[in-house]
Image (cartoon, rainbow, N blue to C red; front, side, top):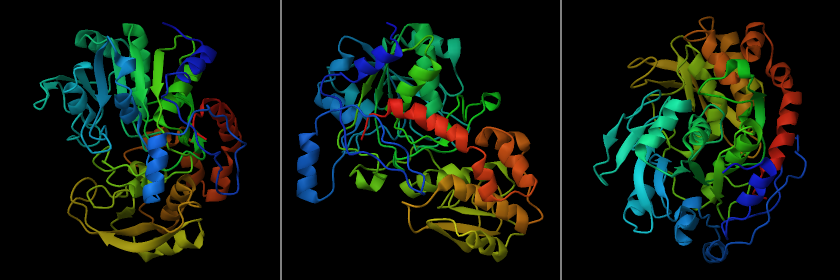
Length: 440
């Protein structure tokens, strides 16, 4: 089945009672986005009553609503699931275990992304092909597979429908959204359909920010031109992927929306349990800073891997309190920097004591992770003569989506000058993005 963008939007907006809406969103940092489109839908009674009892709204995920509807979108289908440890119910059971035990679902395969289905692999790794000990289901490794190779895996697995359910963190270079994109492209080649079960964007869905990827720098940390923070849920991204990047051959797509979620919600306002979607994303606080401080992966500084605060601790041998002082002097909104010393247990500087900074976000409504990351790169280079791009300039260009950030920092530009260069392209993306927003 092939749908036009207009037909796709109409179809996905009418999936039974599996749609939801909430109040209109706003953008922080003095740069409001215009009122954004949304799909109308009734409030969820269970969510509303829970809010009345606890004072804290309860969000129901796409999976919870799919199960409550008796798995109707999966009826008569042989199902494969793309998921990882974050694919859980509100009572922390894994969705694969739940569906495998339910006779209403013909679950025949599991597909593992980066880090693997059970989440045991570190960055850049996966778990390979094996049979899941808990369910006996075959687990296929999809990491770094795309196109016909991934389509062949879907065919070999004997599935009709591929369900995607992974917790995203809202950053372009977090690879699960590109796993979704590759699955959508390959599903077209294999003649399969995709069902996306929605989960919250943990750092809110209020705005998109940062540089937009130049396709010349496409890689698995960014395959299509979206900004460094996209401000979308995974189901909204699926609509955008189908409507903008797969428009010539869109996949047969069905989305199962959340209820009770608003664009202004941080994860701790959802009432949902947090499971680290990858080994170095231990808390929603990590997700908040990650879109900016992940850029330090492309430097010779530690990005905090091997500590209990990855992406919040940054440092290297030879750095001292001057960096924290220079970063604080920028007066970046919503954050302060503490001089810090730490010893990573793995990754860069394993077993060595390094100096640097710890980020302390004191106002997350005002905090801008991308601007903060740029400010930290600028001040690190200015205060430490040993600063270098690592392992070469190619990685920072892939993470930022072009050569501009690297070359401007090397030329001595400041955060204001650097962040101004993507203003026009970001405004253009925001205009496109509004067409795919489901939640108020």
